[in-house]
Amino acid sequence: MSKTRPLKGARLLLALSLGLALGLGGCGTSPDKPASTKGSQQPAKLSAKALLEQAGQAVSPERERLILAAAERYIETGKYEQARRLLIDMESDTLNDDAYVKHTDLLANVALQEGSNILAFGILTKPRLEQQWSAMEPAQELSLREKRAQIFDLMGEAERSVSERVLLSSLITHKQSEKANLNSLWHSLMSINLARLEQLAMSAPGDTERGWYALAAIGKNNQLDLDQQQTLLQRWQREWRNHPAQSNLPDDLRLLKSLIASQPRQIALLLPQSGRLAEAGQAVRDGFFAAYYQALAQGRQVPEVRQYDSTGDIIAAYEQAITDGAQLVIGPLDKEKVTELSLLPGFKVPLLTLNYPEPAPAQAVDNLYQFGLALEDEARQVARQAYSEGHRQAMVIIPEQEWSERSARAFSAEWEKLGGIVVNRSQFKTGSNYSRLVKDALLIEQSQQRTTQLQNLLGIKLETTPRSRGDVDMIFLIANPAQARQIKPTFAFHYAGSIPIYATSQVYTGEPNAKVDRDLNGIRFNTMPWLFDTASPEKQAIKQYTQSAAVYDRLQALGADAFRLYARLPQLAQIEQMRLYGATGTLRMLPDGRIEREQIWARFRNGLAQPLPMVVNASEEY
Image (cartoon, rainbow, N blue to C red; front, top):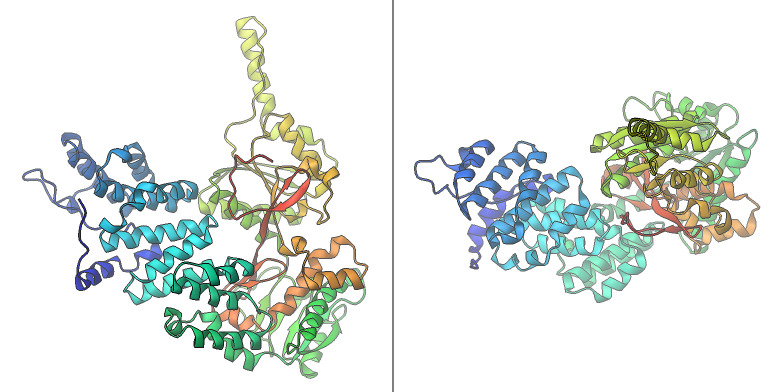
Protein backbone atom coordinates (compact mmCIF):
# COMPACT_ATOMS: atom_id res chain seq x y z
CA MET A 1 0.00 0.00 0.00
CA SER A 2 1.50 3.33 -1.03
CA LYS A 3 1.84 6.24 1.37
CA THR A 4 1.26 9.90 0.64
CA ARG A 5 4.22 12.15 1.29
CA PRO A 6 4.01 14.43 4.36
CA LEU A 7 3.35 18.12 3.90
CA LYS A 8 6.34 20.42 3.63
CA GLY A 9 6.53 21.22 7.35
CA ALA A 10 6.39 17.59 8.38
CA ARG A 11 8.89 16.74 5.70
CA LEU A 12 11.24 19.38 7.09
CA LEU A 13 11.06 17.80 10.54
CA LEU A 14 11.78 14.37 9.12
CA ALA A 15 14.71 15.63 7.08
CA LEU A 16 16.14 17.47 10.07
CA SER A 17 15.96 14.27 12.09
CA LEU A 18 18.45 12.83 9.67
CA GLY A 19 20.94 15.46 10.90
CA LEU A 20 24.50 14.72 9.94
CA ALA A 21 23.82 11.09 9.14
CA LEU A 22 24.41 11.68 5.43
CA GLY A 23 28.07 12.34 5.97
CA LEU A 24 28.56 9.71 8.68
CA GLY A 25 26.99 6.68 7.05
CA GLY A 26 24.18 6.25 9.59
CA CYS A 27 21.25 4.10 8.60
CA GLY A 28 18.83 7.04 8.78
CA THR A 29 15.73 4.88 9.20
CA SER A 30 12.61 6.08 10.94
CA PRO A 31 11.87 4.82 14.50
CA ASP A 32 10.24 1.44 14.89
CA LYS A 33 6.61 1.11 15.87
CA PRO A 34 5.93 -0.44 19.30
CA ALA A 35 5.85 -4.23 19.41
CA SER A 36 2.35 -5.60 19.35
CA THR A 37 3.01 -8.14 22.08
CA LYS A 38 0.86 -7.11 25.01
CA GLY A 39 2.77 -5.92 28.06
CA SER A 40 6.14 -5.91 26.32
CA GLN A 41 8.55 -2.98 26.45
CA GLN A 42 8.90 -0.52 23.60
CA PRO A 43 11.38 -1.96 21.04
CA ALA A 44 13.41 1.25 21.19
CA LYS A 45 14.32 0.30 24.77
CA LEU A 46 15.09 -3.35 24.09
CA SER A 47 18.50 -4.81 23.35
CA ALA A 48 19.18 -6.80 20.19
CA LYS A 49 19.15 -9.98 22.27
CA ALA A 50 15.71 -9.19 23.75
CA LEU A 51 14.33 -8.34 20.32
CA LEU A 52 15.57 -11.64 18.94
CA GLU A 53 13.98 -13.51 21.83
CA GLN A 54 10.67 -11.86 20.98
CA ALA A 55 11.18 -12.66 17.32
CA GLY A 56 11.54 -16.33 18.22
CA GLN A 57 7.98 -16.30 19.59
CA ALA A 58 6.45 -14.13 16.83
CA VAL A 59 5.04 -14.93 13.42
CA SER A 60 5.46 -13.11 10.12
CA PRO A 61 5.51 -10.21 9.43
CA GLU A 62 6.08 -9.29 13.10
CA ARG A 63 8.98 -11.74 13.31
CA GLU A 64 10.86 -10.05 10.45
CA ARG A 65 10.16 -6.59 11.87
CA LEU A 66 11.73 -7.58 15.19
CA ILE A 67 14.77 -9.11 13.48
CA LEU A 68 15.29 -5.91 11.51
CA ALA A 69 15.01 -3.91 14.73
CA ALA A 70 17.64 -6.19 16.32
CA ALA A 71 19.97 -5.69 13.35
CA GLU A 72 19.49 -1.94 13.72
CA ARG A 73 20.50 -2.16 17.40
CA TYR A 74 23.66 -4.04 16.44
CA ILE A 75 24.52 -1.33 13.89
CA GLU A 76 23.93 1.41 16.45
CA THR A 77 26.48 -0.24 18.76
CA GLY A 78 29.02 -0.95 16.00
CA LYS A 79 28.43 -4.72 15.92
CA TYR A 80 28.36 -4.94 12.14
CA GLU A 81 29.25 -8.61 11.85
CA GLN A 82 26.27 -9.64 14.01
CA ALA A 83 24.00 -7.33 12.02
CA ARG A 84 25.26 -8.75 8.73
CA ARG A 85 24.58 -12.32 9.82
CA LEU A 86 21.02 -11.49 10.75
CA LEU A 87 20.35 -9.61 7.54
CA ILE A 88 22.00 -12.08 5.17
CA ASP A 89 19.96 -14.93 6.68
CA MET A 90 16.69 -13.17 5.88
CA GLU A 91 14.89 -13.90 2.61
CA SER A 92 14.61 -10.29 1.50
CA ASP A 93 12.53 -11.10 -1.59
CA THR A 94 9.70 -12.41 0.62
CA LEU A 95 9.51 -9.26 2.78
CA ASN A 96 6.73 -6.73 2.37
CA ASP A 97 7.72 -3.41 0.82
CA ASP A 98 8.37 -1.51 4.07
CA ALA A 99 10.48 -4.33 5.49
CA TYR A 100 12.32 -4.76 2.19
CA VAL A 101 13.31 -1.09 2.10
CA LYS A 102 14.51 -1.17 5.69
CA HIS A 103 16.43 -4.41 5.07
CA THR A 104 18.09 -2.80 2.03
CA ASP A 105 19.05 0.29 4.03
CA LEU A 106 20.49 -1.70 6.93
CA LEU A 107 22.42 -4.23 4.85
CA ALA A 108 23.83 -1.49 2.61
CA ASN A 109 24.93 0.37 5.75
CA VAL A 110 26.79 -2.71 6.98
CA ALA A 111 28.38 -3.37 3.58
CA LEU A 112 29.64 0.22 3.33
CA GLN A 113 30.99 0.15 6.88
CA GLU A 114 32.86 -3.10 6.18
CA GLY A 115 34.16 -1.94 2.81
CA SER A 116 32.17 -4.58 0.91
CA ASN A 117 31.56 -2.24 -2.00
CA ILE A 118 30.51 -4.84 -4.55
CA LEU A 119 27.92 -6.22 -2.12
CA ALA A 120 26.62 -2.72 -1.39
CA PHE A 121 26.41 -1.96 -5.11
CA GLY A 122 24.32 -5.08 -5.72
CA ILE A 123 21.97 -4.32 -2.82
CA LEU A 124 21.37 -0.71 -3.81
CA THR A 125 20.74 -1.30 -7.51
CA LYS A 126 18.10 -4.02 -7.34
CA PRO A 127 15.08 -3.33 -9.59
CA ARG A 128 12.67 -3.74 -6.67
CA LEU A 129 14.22 -0.79 -4.88
CA GLU A 130 13.60 1.44 -7.89
CA GLN A 131 9.88 0.73 -7.52
CA GLN A 132 9.77 1.97 -3.92
CA TRP A 133 10.85 5.62 -4.13
CA SER A 134 7.38 7.16 -4.37
CA ALA A 135 6.20 5.27 -1.27
CA MET A 136 9.15 6.09 0.99
CA GLU A 137 9.28 8.52 3.85
CA PRO A 138 11.64 11.45 3.02
CA ALA A 139 14.18 10.48 5.70
CA GLN A 140 14.33 6.93 4.34
CA GLU A 141 14.80 8.18 0.78
CA LEU A 142 17.54 10.56 1.91
CA SER A 143 19.39 7.73 3.64
CA LEU A 144 19.18 5.35 0.69
CA ARG A 145 20.04 7.91 -1.95
CA GLU A 146 23.07 9.02 0.05
CA LYS A 147 24.28 5.42 0.20
CA ARG A 148 23.68 4.99 -3.53
CA ALA A 149 25.64 8.15 -4.28
CA GLN A 150 28.51 6.89 -2.10
CA ILE A 151 28.68 3.46 -3.69
CA PHE A 152 28.38 4.76 -7.25
CA ASP A 153 31.32 7.04 -6.54
CA LEU A 154 33.36 4.21 -4.97
CA MET A 155 32.65 1.93 -7.93
CA GLY A 156 33.64 4.51 -10.53
CA GLU A 157 30.04 5.19 -11.62
CA ALA A 158 30.50 8.95 -11.40
CA GLU A 159 27.58 9.94 -13.60
CA ARG A 160 25.14 7.85 -11.56
CA SER A 161 26.57 9.39 -8.38
CA VAL A 162 26.01 12.88 -9.82
CA SER A 163 22.36 12.04 -10.62
CA GLU A 164 21.77 10.81 -7.07
CA ARG A 165 23.36 13.89 -5.53
CA VAL A 166 21.34 16.25 -7.71
CA LEU A 167 18.21 14.46 -6.44
CA LEU A 168 19.53 14.67 -2.89
CA SER A 169 20.05 18.42 -3.18
CA SER A 170 16.31 18.83 -3.73
CA LEU A 171 15.52 16.76 -0.61
CA ILE A 172 18.06 18.05 1.94
CA THR A 173 17.08 20.96 4.15
CA HIS A 174 19.92 20.88 6.69
CA LYS A 175 22.58 23.43 5.70
CA GLN A 176 25.58 21.40 6.79
CA SER A 177 24.31 18.28 5.05
CA GLU A 178 23.61 20.36 1.93
CA LYS A 179 27.21 21.60 1.88
CA ALA A 180 28.59 18.07 2.35
CA ASN A 181 26.40 16.83 -0.49
CA LEU A 182 27.57 19.60 -2.84
CA ASN A 183 31.21 18.88 -1.99
CA SER A 184 30.68 15.20 -2.81
CA LEU A 185 28.79 16.12 -5.99
CA TRP A 186 31.72 18.26 -7.13
CA HIS A 187 34.18 15.46 -6.32
CA SER A 188 32.21 13.05 -8.53
CA LEU A 189 32.02 15.60 -11.33
CA MET A 190 35.76 16.16 -11.19
CA SER A 191 36.43 12.42 -11.64
CA ILE A 192 34.88 12.54 -15.14
CA ASN A 193 37.17 13.35 -18.06
CA LEU A 194 36.83 16.70 -19.77
CA ALA A 195 35.50 15.42 -23.11
CA ARG A 196 32.69 13.55 -21.35
CA LEU A 197 31.85 16.58 -19.18
CA GLU A 198 31.50 18.75 -22.26
CA GLN A 199 29.26 16.14 -23.89
CA LEU A 200 27.05 15.81 -20.81
CA ALA A 201 26.75 19.60 -20.56
CA MET A 202 24.76 19.33 -23.78
CA SER A 203 22.95 15.99 -23.36
CA ALA A 204 22.33 15.32 -19.65
CA PRO A 205 18.66 15.07 -18.57
CA GLY A 206 17.40 18.23 -16.88
CA ASP A 207 18.70 21.77 -16.70
CA THR A 208 20.20 21.34 -13.24
CA GLU A 209 22.42 18.44 -14.30
CA ARG A 210 23.47 20.14 -17.53
CA GLY A 211 24.42 23.25 -15.56
CA TRP A 212 26.54 21.20 -13.17
CA TYR A 213 28.32 19.45 -16.04
CA ALA A 214 28.99 22.78 -17.76
CA LEU A 215 30.42 24.20 -14.54
CA ALA A 216 32.53 21.07 -13.98
CA ALA A 217 33.98 21.38 -17.48
CA ILE A 218 35.21 24.86 -16.49
CA GLY A 219 36.66 23.46 -13.26
CA LYS A 220 38.39 20.60 -15.06
CA ASN A 221 39.59 22.60 -18.07
CA ASN A 222 42.04 25.51 -18.00
CA GLN A 223 43.54 24.42 -14.69
CA LEU A 224 46.75 26.01 -15.90
CA ASP A 225 45.13 29.26 -17.02
CA LEU A 226 43.56 31.09 -14.11
CA ASP A 227 42.49 34.10 -16.18
CA GLN A 228 40.75 31.99 -18.83
CA GLN A 229 39.06 29.92 -16.14
CA GLN A 230 37.75 33.06 -14.46
CA THR A 231 36.44 34.40 -17.79
CA LEU A 232 34.58 31.15 -18.47
CA LEU A 233 33.15 31.12 -14.94
CA GLN A 234 31.76 34.63 -15.39
CA ARG A 235 30.15 33.56 -18.67
CA TRP A 236 28.60 30.52 -16.94
CA GLN A 237 27.18 32.75 -14.20
CA ARG A 238 25.48 34.91 -16.83
CA GLU A 239 24.05 31.92 -18.70
CA TRP A 240 22.86 29.90 -15.66
CA ARG A 241 21.33 32.61 -13.47
CA ASN A 242 18.80 30.27 -11.83
CA HIS A 243 21.15 27.34 -11.20
CA PRO A 244 21.57 26.28 -7.52
CA ALA A 245 25.37 26.62 -7.80
CA GLN A 246 25.00 30.40 -8.28
CA SER A 247 24.61 30.89 -4.54
CA ASN A 248 27.01 28.11 -3.55
CA LEU A 249 29.95 27.92 -5.96
CA PRO A 250 32.49 25.13 -5.42
CA ASP A 251 35.28 26.45 -3.22
CA ASP A 252 38.03 26.07 -5.82
CA LEU A 253 36.17 28.28 -8.30
CA ARG A 254 35.23 30.79 -5.63
CA LEU A 255 38.95 31.44 -4.95
CA LEU A 256 39.92 32.18 -8.55
CA LYS A 257 40.04 35.97 -8.18
CA SER A 258 42.34 35.88 -5.18
CA LEU A 259 44.59 33.30 -6.86
CA ILE A 260 44.98 35.49 -9.93
CA ALA A 261 45.94 38.45 -7.76
CA SER A 262 48.46 36.53 -5.65
CA GLN A 263 50.19 34.17 -8.11
CA PRO A 264 54.02 34.40 -8.08
CA ARG A 265 55.64 36.63 -10.71
CA GLN A 266 59.13 35.19 -10.20
CA ILE A 267 60.06 31.57 -9.48
CA ALA A 268 63.38 30.03 -8.52
CA LEU A 269 64.13 26.51 -9.76
CA LEU A 270 66.66 24.68 -7.55
CA LEU A 271 67.83 21.54 -9.34
CA PRO A 272 71.12 19.62 -9.59
CA GLN A 273 73.20 20.75 -12.58
CA SER A 274 76.19 18.50 -11.87
CA GLY A 275 77.06 15.35 -9.96
CA ARG A 276 75.20 12.04 -9.70
CA LEU A 277 71.72 13.61 -10.00
CA ALA A 278 72.50 15.88 -12.95
CA GLU A 279 70.56 13.76 -15.49
CA ALA A 280 67.60 13.44 -13.12
CA GLY A 281 67.64 17.20 -12.62
CA GLN A 282 67.69 17.72 -16.38
CA ALA A 283 64.65 15.45 -16.81
CA VAL A 284 62.69 17.48 -14.24
CA ARG A 285 63.79 20.68 -15.99
CA ASP A 286 62.65 19.29 -19.35
CA GLY A 287 59.18 18.60 -17.98
CA PHE A 288 58.94 21.96 -16.21
CA PHE A 289 59.92 24.03 -19.25
CA ALA A 290 57.84 21.93 -21.64
CA ALA A 291 54.80 22.96 -19.57
CA TYR A 292 56.13 26.53 -19.27
CA TYR A 293 56.58 27.05 -23.02
CA GLN A 294 53.28 25.38 -23.79
CA ALA A 295 51.59 27.96 -21.53
CA LEU A 296 53.55 30.76 -23.19
CA ALA A 297 52.55 29.55 -26.67
CA GLN A 298 48.90 29.68 -25.64
CA GLY A 299 49.20 33.28 -24.56
CA ARG A 300 48.94 32.56 -20.85
CA GLN A 301 50.61 34.67 -18.22
CA VAL A 302 53.79 32.95 -16.99
CA PRO A 303 56.27 33.90 -14.27
CA GLU A 304 59.93 34.73 -14.72
CA VAL A 305 62.00 31.63 -13.90
CA ARG A 306 65.57 31.75 -12.57
CA GLN A 307 67.64 28.59 -12.19
CA TYR A 308 70.06 27.72 -9.39
CA ASP A 309 72.34 24.72 -8.93
CA SER A 310 71.30 22.73 -5.86
CA THR A 311 74.46 20.57 -5.86
CA GLY A 312 76.34 22.78 -3.37
CA ASP A 313 75.14 24.63 -0.27
CA ILE A 314 71.38 24.35 -0.50
CA ILE A 315 70.65 26.88 2.25
CA ALA A 316 72.78 29.45 0.48
CA ALA A 317 71.05 28.71 -2.85
CA TYR A 318 67.61 29.15 -1.27
CA GLU A 319 68.58 32.45 0.37
CA GLN A 320 70.19 33.72 -2.84
CA ALA A 321 66.98 32.99 -4.74
CA ILE A 322 65.02 35.07 -2.23
CA THR A 323 67.55 37.89 -2.43
CA ASP A 324 67.10 37.85 -6.22
CA GLY A 325 63.35 38.38 -5.82
CA ALA A 326 61.86 34.88 -5.96
CA GLN A 327 58.27 34.69 -4.69
CA LEU A 328 58.24 30.86 -4.85
CA VAL A 329 61.12 28.37 -4.76
CA ILE A 330 60.74 24.96 -6.44
CA GLY A 331 63.20 22.18 -5.51
CA PRO A 332 65.50 20.63 -4.55
CA LEU A 333 65.27 17.04 -5.80
CA ASP A 334 67.77 15.31 -3.52
CA LYS A 335 66.09 13.87 -0.40
CA GLU A 336 69.03 14.83 1.84
CA LYS A 337 68.93 18.45 0.72
CA VAL A 338 65.14 18.55 1.09
CA THR A 339 65.59 17.30 4.65
CA GLU A 340 68.24 19.96 5.31
CA LEU A 341 65.93 22.73 4.10
CA SER A 342 62.98 21.35 6.07
CA LEU A 343 64.91 21.95 9.31
CA LEU A 344 64.97 25.72 8.80
CA PRO A 345 63.02 27.58 11.51
CA GLY A 346 60.83 29.28 8.91
CA PHE A 347 60.45 30.11 5.24
CA LYS A 348 60.39 33.69 4.00
CA VAL A 349 58.76 32.63 0.73
CA PRO A 350 56.91 29.39 -0.10
CA LEU A 351 59.03 26.34 -0.90
CA LEU A 352 57.75 23.48 -3.08
CA THR A 353 60.19 20.60 -2.64
CA LEU A 354 60.44 17.84 -5.23
CA ASN A 355 61.03 15.09 -2.70
CA TYR A 356 59.98 14.36 0.86
CA PRO A 357 62.12 15.05 3.95
CA GLU A 358 63.19 12.12 6.10
CA PRO A 359 62.01 12.17 8.79
CA ALA A 360 58.89 14.18 8.05
CA PRO A 361 58.41 17.37 10.09
CA ALA A 362 56.61 16.69 13.36
CA GLN A 363 53.97 19.28 12.48
CA ALA A 364 52.91 21.41 9.52
CA VAL A 365 55.39 24.16 8.61
CA ASP A 366 54.09 27.40 7.10
CA ASN A 367 55.14 27.92 3.48
CA LEU A 368 56.58 24.38 3.16
CA TYR A 369 54.93 22.23 0.49
CA GLN A 370 56.23 18.74 -0.29
CA PHE A 371 55.75 17.03 -3.65
CA GLY A 372 57.42 13.98 -5.15
CA LEU A 373 57.05 10.48 -6.50
CA ALA A 374 56.63 8.72 -3.14
CA LEU A 375 56.41 4.95 -3.50
CA GLU A 376 54.56 4.84 -0.18
CA ASP A 377 51.64 6.69 -1.80
CA GLU A 378 51.46 4.01 -4.47
CA ALA A 379 51.48 1.22 -1.88
CA ARG A 380 48.67 2.82 0.11
CA GLN A 381 46.66 3.22 -3.08
CA VAL A 382 47.13 -0.50 -3.84
CA ALA A 383 45.72 -1.33 -0.41
CA ARG A 384 42.65 0.87 -0.92
CA GLN A 385 42.00 -0.45 -4.41
CA ALA A 386 42.33 -4.14 -3.54
CA TYR A 387 40.15 -3.70 -0.47
CA SER A 388 37.47 -1.88 -2.48
CA GLU A 389 37.41 -4.84 -4.87
CA GLY A 390 36.55 -7.22 -2.05
CA HIS A 391 39.92 -8.67 -1.03
CA ARG A 392 40.79 -9.11 2.64
CA GLN A 393 43.79 -11.49 2.98
CA ALA A 394 47.03 -10.31 1.41
CA MET A 395 50.39 -11.85 0.64
CA VAL A 396 53.27 -9.38 0.27
CA ILE A 397 56.33 -10.14 -1.88
CA ILE A 398 59.09 -7.52 -2.08
CA PRO A 399 62.80 -7.23 -2.90
CA GLU A 400 65.33 -6.91 -0.09
CA GLN A 401 65.78 -3.16 -0.41
CA GLU A 402 65.17 -0.30 2.01
CA TRP A 403 62.76 1.60 -0.27
CA SER A 404 60.62 -1.52 -0.80
CA GLU A 405 60.54 -2.07 2.97
CA ARG A 406 59.04 1.43 3.33
CA SER A 407 56.46 0.65 0.67
CA ALA A 408 55.55 -2.66 2.30
CA ARG A 409 55.09 -0.95 5.67
CA ALA A 410 52.86 1.69 4.07
CA PHE A 411 50.77 -0.99 2.37
CA SER A 412 50.41 -3.07 5.54
CA ALA A 413 49.46 -0.08 7.69
CA GLU A 414 46.77 1.04 5.21
CA TRP A 415 45.56 -2.53 4.63
CA GLU A 416 45.18 -3.29 8.33
CA LYS A 417 43.56 0.10 8.99
CA LEU A 418 40.91 -0.81 6.43
CA GLY A 419 40.34 -4.21 8.06
CA GLY A 420 42.51 -6.49 5.91
CA ILE A 421 45.02 -9.09 7.11
CA VAL A 422 48.57 -9.65 5.87
CA VAL A 423 48.92 -13.43 6.09
CA ASN A 424 52.44 -13.73 4.69
CA ARG A 425 55.39 -11.53 3.74
CA SER A 426 58.33 -12.77 1.67
CA GLN A 427 61.48 -11.05 0.42
CA PHE A 428 63.81 -11.88 -2.43
CA LYS A 429 67.17 -10.85 -3.83
CA THR A 430 67.75 -10.17 -7.51
CA GLY A 431 68.58 -13.46 -9.20
CA SER A 432 66.95 -15.52 -6.44
CA ASN A 433 65.33 -18.89 -7.02
CA TYR A 434 61.88 -17.38 -7.66
CA SER A 435 60.23 -20.80 -7.86
CA ARG A 436 61.43 -21.60 -4.34
CA LEU A 437 60.31 -18.16 -3.15
CA VAL A 438 56.75 -18.65 -4.43
CA LYS A 439 56.59 -22.30 -3.42
CA ASP A 440 57.53 -21.45 0.17
CA ALA A 441 55.13 -18.50 0.31
CA LEU A 442 52.25 -20.65 -0.94
CA LEU A 443 53.08 -23.56 1.44
CA ILE A 444 53.24 -25.99 -1.50
CA GLU A 445 55.77 -28.22 0.25
CA GLN A 446 53.45 -28.68 3.23
CA SER A 447 50.72 -29.79 0.82
CA GLN A 448 53.06 -32.33 -0.74
CA GLN A 449 54.08 -33.57 2.71
CA ARG A 450 50.43 -34.10 3.67
CA THR A 451 49.94 -36.21 0.54
CA THR A 452 53.01 -38.30 1.38
CA GLN A 453 51.79 -38.85 4.95
CA LEU A 454 48.38 -39.89 3.70
CA GLN A 455 49.92 -42.33 1.21
CA ASN A 456 52.05 -43.85 3.96
CA LEU A 457 49.01 -44.15 6.19
CA LEU A 458 46.84 -45.82 3.54
CA GLY A 459 49.62 -47.83 1.93
CA ILE A 460 48.57 -46.83 -1.59
CA LYS A 461 49.73 -44.27 -4.17
CA LEU A 462 47.35 -41.32 -4.48
CA GLU A 463 46.77 -39.32 -7.64
CA THR A 464 46.66 -35.82 -6.17
CA THR A 465 47.61 -32.28 -7.17
CA PRO A 466 49.41 -30.14 -4.57
CA ARG A 467 47.35 -27.21 -3.38
CA SER A 468 48.45 -23.68 -2.59
CA ARG A 469 47.38 -22.10 0.69
CA GLY A 470 43.73 -21.09 0.83
CA ASP A 471 44.03 -18.06 3.10
CA VAL A 472 45.24 -15.59 0.44
CA ASP A 473 42.94 -13.71 -1.93
CA MET A 474 45.38 -11.09 -3.30
CA ILE A 475 49.12 -10.63 -3.76
CA PHE A 476 50.94 -7.32 -3.40
CA LEU A 477 54.10 -7.48 -5.48
CA ILE A 478 56.91 -4.94 -5.63
CA ALA A 479 59.29 -5.83 -8.45
CA ASN A 480 60.93 -4.35 -11.50
CA PRO A 481 59.84 -5.67 -14.92
CA ALA A 482 62.62 -8.26 -15.21
CA GLN A 483 61.89 -9.68 -11.75
CA ALA A 484 58.12 -9.65 -12.26
CA ARG A 485 58.41 -11.48 -15.61
CA GLN A 486 59.96 -14.40 -13.73
CA ILE A 487 57.83 -14.26 -10.58
CA LYS A 488 54.37 -13.94 -12.18
CA PRO A 489 54.41 -17.23 -14.20
CA THR A 490 55.68 -19.07 -11.13
CA PHE A 491 52.36 -18.51 -9.35
CA ALA A 492 50.49 -20.31 -12.12
CA PHE A 493 53.05 -23.13 -12.06
CA HIS A 494 52.41 -23.55 -8.33
CA TYR A 495 48.60 -23.68 -8.63
CA ALA A 496 47.93 -20.05 -7.67
CA GLY A 497 47.40 -18.47 -11.08
CA SER A 498 43.89 -17.31 -10.17
CA ILE A 499 45.00 -15.14 -7.24
CA PRO A 500 45.01 -11.49 -8.44
CA ILE A 501 48.37 -9.70 -8.30
CA TYR A 502 48.58 -5.97 -7.61
CA ALA A 503 51.81 -4.06 -8.14
CA THR A 504 53.25 -0.55 -8.02
CA SER A 505 54.46 1.43 -11.03
CA GLN A 506 57.95 -0.15 -10.97
CA VAL A 507 56.51 -3.22 -12.72
CA TYR A 508 56.18 -1.34 -16.03
CA THR A 509 59.01 0.17 -18.07
CA GLY A 510 56.68 2.70 -19.68
CA GLU A 511 57.50 1.36 -23.14
CA PRO A 512 55.03 -1.07 -24.81
CA ASN A 513 56.65 -4.44 -25.52
CA ALA A 514 54.06 -7.19 -25.97
CA LYS A 515 56.66 -9.87 -26.66
CA VAL A 516 58.59 -9.61 -23.40
CA ASP A 517 55.69 -8.46 -21.20
CA ARG A 518 53.29 -11.30 -21.98
CA ASP A 519 54.48 -13.03 -18.80
CA LEU A 520 53.03 -10.06 -16.86
CA ASN A 521 49.49 -10.68 -18.13
CA GLY A 522 46.89 -10.11 -15.44
CA ILE A 523 49.04 -7.95 -13.14
CA ARG A 524 47.25 -4.75 -12.11
CA PHE A 525 49.36 -1.75 -11.23
CA ASN A 526 48.96 1.93 -10.52
CA THR A 527 50.87 4.41 -12.60
CA MET A 528 50.89 8.03 -13.71
CA PRO A 529 48.58 9.24 -16.52
CA TRP A 530 51.63 10.68 -18.31
CA LEU A 531 52.65 7.21 -19.51
CA PHE A 532 49.39 6.77 -21.47
CA ASP A 533 48.86 10.37 -22.57
CA THR A 534 49.97 10.30 -26.20
CA ALA A 535 48.28 13.64 -26.94
CA SER A 536 50.17 15.69 -24.34
CA PRO A 537 51.88 18.64 -26.10
CA GLU A 538 54.46 18.77 -23.31
CA LYS A 539 55.33 15.12 -23.80
CA GLN A 540 55.56 15.54 -27.56
CA ALA A 541 57.86 18.55 -27.17
CA ILE A 542 60.18 16.64 -24.84
CA LYS A 543 60.39 13.75 -27.30
CA GLN A 544 61.12 16.13 -30.17
CA TYR A 545 63.77 18.27 -28.51
CA THR A 546 65.53 15.96 -26.04
CA GLN A 547 67.27 12.60 -26.12
CA SER A 548 66.16 11.43 -22.66
CA ALA A 549 65.87 7.71 -22.01
CA ALA A 550 62.46 6.25 -21.13
CA VAL A 551 63.63 5.75 -17.54
CA TYR A 552 63.34 9.53 -17.06
CA ASP A 553 59.68 9.76 -18.18
CA ARG A 554 58.42 9.90 -14.61
CA LEU A 555 60.79 12.72 -13.65
CA GLN A 556 59.68 14.70 -16.69
CA ALA A 557 56.09 14.31 -15.52
CA LEU A 558 57.19 15.50 -12.06
CA GLY A 559 58.64 18.64 -13.62
CA ALA A 560 55.50 19.29 -15.67
CA ASP A 561 53.36 19.02 -12.56
CA ALA A 562 55.68 21.30 -10.59
CA PHE A 563 54.83 24.01 -13.11
CA ARG A 564 51.11 23.15 -12.97
CA LEU A 565 51.19 23.46 -9.18
CA TYR A 566 52.93 26.79 -8.80
CA ALA A 567 49.83 29.03 -8.95
CA ARG A 568 47.47 26.54 -7.26
CA LEU A 569 49.29 25.90 -3.98
CA PRO A 570 47.13 28.31 -1.89
CA GLN A 571 43.99 26.79 -3.41
CA LEU A 572 45.09 23.23 -2.56
CA ALA A 573 46.09 24.33 0.93
CA GLN A 574 42.76 26.02 1.70
CA ILE A 575 40.32 23.55 0.15
CA GLU A 576 40.44 19.96 1.32
CA GLN A 577 38.35 18.76 -1.65
CA MET A 578 40.49 20.55 -4.26
CA ARG A 579 42.15 18.28 -6.83
CA LEU A 580 44.64 19.10 -9.56
CA TYR A 581 44.59 16.65 -12.46
CA GLY A 582 48.22 16.39 -13.40
CA ALA A 583 50.68 14.29 -15.37
CA THR A 584 51.70 12.29 -12.28
CA GLY A 585 48.15 11.67 -11.05
CA THR A 586 45.32 13.40 -9.25
CA LEU A 587 46.95 15.71 -6.72
CA ARG A 588 45.61 16.85 -3.37
CA MET A 589 47.26 18.51 -0.41
CA LEU A 590 47.22 16.92 3.04
CA PRO A 591 47.00 19.12 6.16
CA ASP A 592 50.79 18.95 6.69
CA GLY A 593 51.52 20.46 3.25
CA ARG A 594 52.37 17.12 1.70
CA ILE A 595 50.95 16.61 -1.80
CA GLU A 596 49.58 13.11 -2.31
CA ARG A 597 49.12 11.51 -5.73
CA GLU A 598 46.28 9.20 -6.75
CA GLN A 599 47.40 7.39 -9.88
CA ILE A 600 45.41 5.66 -12.59
CA TRP A 601 45.13 1.87 -12.83
CA ALA A 602 46.33 -0.36 -15.64
CA ARG A 603 46.55 -4.09 -16.31
CA PHE A 604 48.69 -6.20 -18.62
CA ARG A 605 46.59 -7.88 -21.28
CA ASN A 606 48.17 -9.69 -24.22
CA GLY A 607 51.50 -8.28 -23.13
CA LEU A 608 50.37 -4.65 -23.26
CA ALA A 609 49.57 -2.33 -20.37
CA GLN A 610 46.04 -0.97 -20.71
CA PRO A 611 44.29 1.64 -18.50
CA LEU A 612 41.45 0.33 -16.35
CA PRO A 613 38.28 1.73 -14.75
CA MET A 614 38.41 2.52 -11.03
CA VAL A 615 37.08 -0.88 -9.89
CA VAL A 616 37.53 -4.05 -11.90
CA ASN A 617 35.88 -7.45 -11.78
CA ALA A 618 38.30 -10.08 -10.56
CA SER A 619 36.69 -12.67 -12.82
CA GLU A 620 37.54 -10.83 -16.03
CA GLU A 621 39.86 -12.72 -18.35
CA TYR A 622 43.34 -11.44 -19.07
